[in-house]
Length: 198
Image (cartoon, rainbow, N blue to C red; front, top):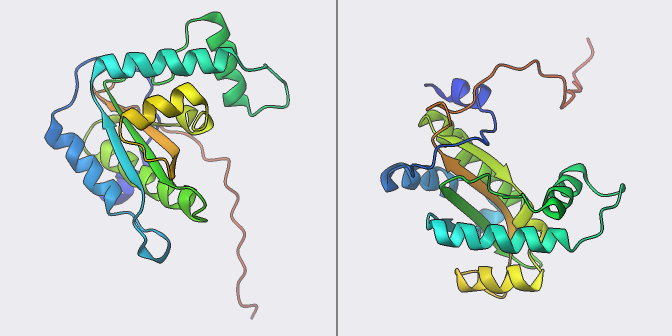
């Protein structure tokens, strides 16, 4: 698969097999993420790789409980509202049961923290697609980065006090063996050209 195909066929895969990909494949995805550009080449995005099913289950419970305690308001971002509503029903698993969760973090107060982490996450999603792995960017841990129980648990997994969660990526084999690559008509992200007038 060439670069353009890997980019243009990438879609979010949320339904995955329980089988964990080999560490060598996960490391290739991480390598792509670590090669991402960053502001002033700061390279401060931390990657916390979780493959332990018990840790993933515990995180899912903490996240569900934190969202269930939140007020469900119409003015909230739609994905956040959906997370709160599903959590209140008791059935929510924020990582969709994927066998791998890669959490990104960066320094508090660093102006490029989210942008740098976004580049890392995008590189990893493209690499996953090229390696026939499913992936999906998830933000629930970012939204809960200062929630006390989630924060304490993430600290036990290696998140330093001076950093905050910037995003996450689930990774695994698609439920049908391959990542989702359904073609779509691009209707978003408008383009404006400013050209020399002749």
